Length: 434
Image (tube, rainbow, N blue to C red; front, side, top):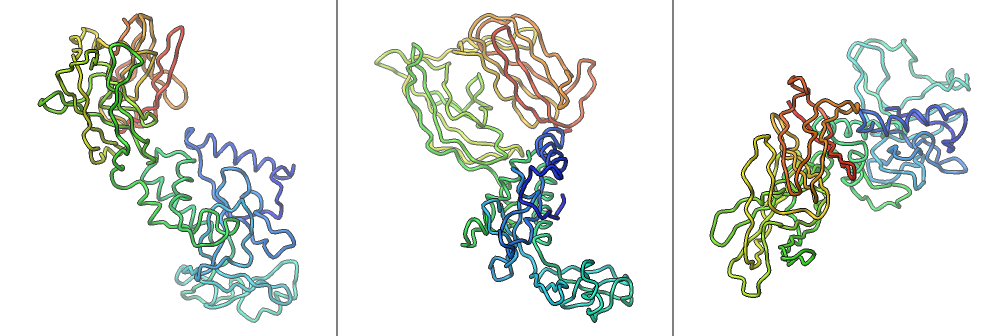
């Protein structure tokens, strides 16, 4: 993370394109593909004729940081520009005569004891372009300070930006699996609106507590949970719908079902781990075809996150039905076929995810077909071939115990499961934690 800024608003300036391209590569490919969080000071150019966020803070997906004072007012030097993403506290900057910088602020740092440093209070910084300014500064300079403990005050957007990068580092220390865009989203969404124009404050004032609390605690209970009759197949089936949760660490949803007065359980083909990007579930085991249905099926659901925390259950919903299909016995190759036939190819999210010792990979086939299921690491290398064989139409599941083809344990990290046939392929991300 570099906090400085260049005196240009043009990220396509040939002088700076190597820096621009390096940052774009870091944002998109750093951290083994998860992306590097880049934070830059927006520059101190608001007093210039054209106020702008300076390069490289104006590169897309870089967090551009402006500055406010302790009263919540935008600092006079902080740019007024739509490229501002967030603001944080910083000291003031004034230009004295003859052009020596006078910093007066409220951001304090402590010098190392018994080392040279700055005197307390206001101080001037020598500008190499104006030698007289150096001569006119009455305070001790450079290494001429006597030993002792010194306190300095710092200003500019360069003092605001490190606070944002520090919060990003705290987030990643607890949630290292988050992508660059997810961390940026947390920082911006947890900022506090301080009623300044958007071009001054961006998303608002950095709030470390809000940012770190953003992912803590269990996810919210899924909202607008409903059960209706799905008529896309015959006999009809129960269809569950809900509104998607917005937590960035959401891992999926768990659906539970109860027949009449029996105990709660999960549907056999994926109800225990519905993908986080899904907002409906069709229970293919329950058939509704007669007008005089004589049984009742009850449903409830909850969300869960990557930390293994579950939300409260939704209110229970029910629907009448006629008959329930039963799963077949487990076959000798550990793949289980369910009687219901899916309408299309699908690879469901593995469960649990993240996992430590073993996870279950479930997939559905609308026809008899030969499929290949392989596990890849973050570098795109095949580490395990789970199967390459012909399956009958229906729902199936295979376990993976986190080992490679030689039986050796794989290290913690991100892996990808790919199912492929001559007509279809799909990939799911998995997280192994040792």
